[in-house]
Length: 202
Image (cartoon, one colour):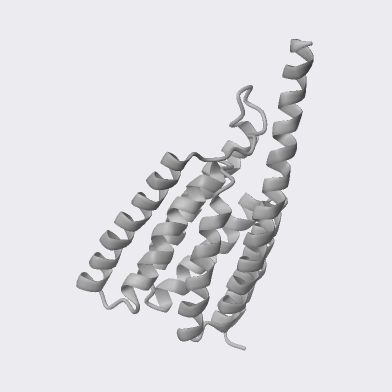
């Protein structure tokens, strides 16, 4: 087994654990994610997936932001609650994603030897949006991750990055589970905040 495969498997295990903890709303997701993306940054450079490589740099920075925000982003500098998004916010998320896709895809297709430039740009652009929404504990982040993972599975299989392909199949399952778990937690959160209001009105 060569050193690249060993590194890839380390990144796979850390990445899977990262998403598992995210689905369970546990703060350990962030340090594990930082380890995983640091390794993937090197792997994607070697595979000439430059948009994905650039994405890992963003993930590295956002990992520290998310770690802090989950712990201290609440109104009283406490744990950040899960929140939903309005239709207008959804439109904004999609607009940012598609505009970023076009810009990133054009750049890497025109100025580099990147493979699958626009497909790679799709996963990059919408991962950027999803990562920011996860750091803000927006419920809809999981729906965007599902859309990203479906395409990423095809890209990594085509590039013969088989451990990474397996990882993204796992990510897809965890993203679906994460959405269901967070939706349940969000509803419980909303019920808990509404009960004191009802008691005050009585």
